Length: 290
Image (cartoon, rainbow, N blue to C red):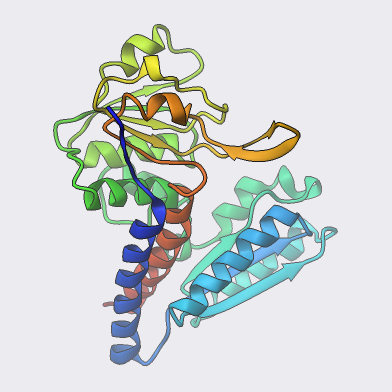
C-alpha cells in the first residue's frame, strides 16, 4: 500500500480562508479588525522566523497586528507589565508570547503565559482554557492539535469510533490532542516513555499521532495496515553533512503501510499558524459578543 500524503498547505489554505471570511464579518458588523499581538524577547533566529510568518499571515488576512520586540535583558516585571498593557488594549484580541524565553526568564514561563487573560490566550495554554477543554466547554484550544483535528475532518478520515493512539503527553500537543480526539468520540490511548509494549498498542490504532520529539521514532512495523499517521515532530538532524528537518515518523517506511500520512516538513506545521489566525478571529468574536 502507498499512503495518501496529507500535505498541510491545502488544509491550511482552507482554514485561513474561513478565518478571512469570519474576520470580514467582524469588520462589517463592528468596524473592527481582529487583532493579534506577538511578544518576542531576545533574538533567537528560529523564533524570529516564526514571528515573521505570523505577521505575514495577519497581513494576508488583513488582521490588526502588533509585534513587540523586547531585549534579552528584559526583566520579569517589564515583561509582565507589557502583557498587562496588551490585556487592556481593546484593539488586541489575542496575545502570544513567543517561546522559548531567554534563560533569565525561562523559570517564569508559566507565570508569563498565565498572565495573559484567558479570553486573549490564542495559544490555548492558560489553565482556565485547559480546564474548559478538559470538560468539553467552548474555549480557545492549542493551535497544533486543533489543526490536526481540522485536517482529519477535511480529509474525511473518520474519528468517531476510531482507536487513536497519541504518542507523547506534553501540555502543548499530547494532552490537548487526546482531549480533542475524545470530544470527537474516538477511543484514545496516550503512550509515553514509560509505556510497555508500545508496538503492540500502536498496531491496534486507526489513527496514530506522533508527538514524542524523537526523530523517526515510529517505524513501519508499529503501524497497522491502512492506519492514518499524523507526524507532529520537528527534529533537526545531520544527513550527509546537511542539517535537515525530519519528523517523529520514519516516513519512507510508514508510508508503505499507512493509508494516509503527513510529511515533515510540509505537513502539520503549516496548520499551526493557520489555526492561530482562526483563534485570533474566534477570540475577537467572543470579546465583541458575536
